[in-house]
Amino acid sequence: MTAKAPHLASITDALIEATKNVEEIYFQLPVAGREEPQFRERVYCYELYHQMRLCWPDVPYKITGEIDKNGHPWIYHGPLDYSKPDFTVHIPGRMADNLLVIEVKAFNPTDEQVVIDLRKLTGFCLTANYFAAYYLIYGFTNAKAQEFANHCKKLAAQDGEIKLARIKLFNHATAQSPASEVSWPA
Image (cartoon, rainbow, N blue to C red; front, side, top):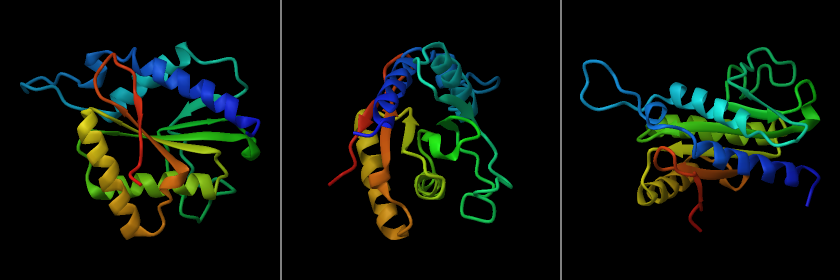
């Protein structure tokens, strides 16, 4: 076990705890003129960030949201240029201390969105030396989350750049419930 693994475990616990505190209004936003509320990824992410900060463990790592990597001296002109991961967990200013990158996606993303996210997560592990990558989906039933995992595996096999072994998948099925890990198919 590396020195980063216990910190990652504490941060994963905080992520799961934070998902339990995301209320329905942030999970699916009511929209004037529409009968049904809508999934709004940015609204969800802002609230998740807030909830994670409230239960952040005593670790040296900091969580940041949507850091624009455009022009970053170590990433510039590479596959990650112009990328903005939803969350990064790191010690700012120290590339050797990149711990976790998280991408979030609401129910029913397009194949193109999924491929972009999975490539980005893979790239941050391989190019920017992140220790771990999480793909957090929300609004999926448990059965739909497993179907999504199977579909991701097919997309990864077709793509060739995606390394699912570097990525953990989590599903936050409903508001005020804990996210849970979803296994990639064998």
